[in-house]
Length: 117
Image (cartoon, rainbow, N blue to C red; front, side):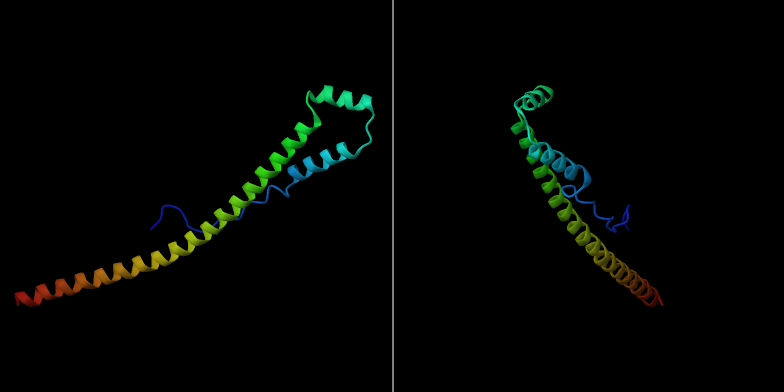
């Protein structure tokens, strides 16, 4: 009936608690908690070409995007489940309707032969 199977694939792994975002948080936390001299701060700013607050904002933005992606993944998974259930129900209904139409066609064809006799 459908060109593709309606079964839901395995859900995608969460991004926010995934390895990349966790590593980003861990690395940033280690950088922030390490004692820093004036020279080290100046060297870090020179190497990063930005203020650490900007990097912190970027990490928070990545975290927010990862959280939203995980929310959307949950919604898509729920919709896939509903779609799979609806496909099964509609498939059964279409099969019943096809059987009913076939039965009506046989009845009409049978009446046509008795009318001629």
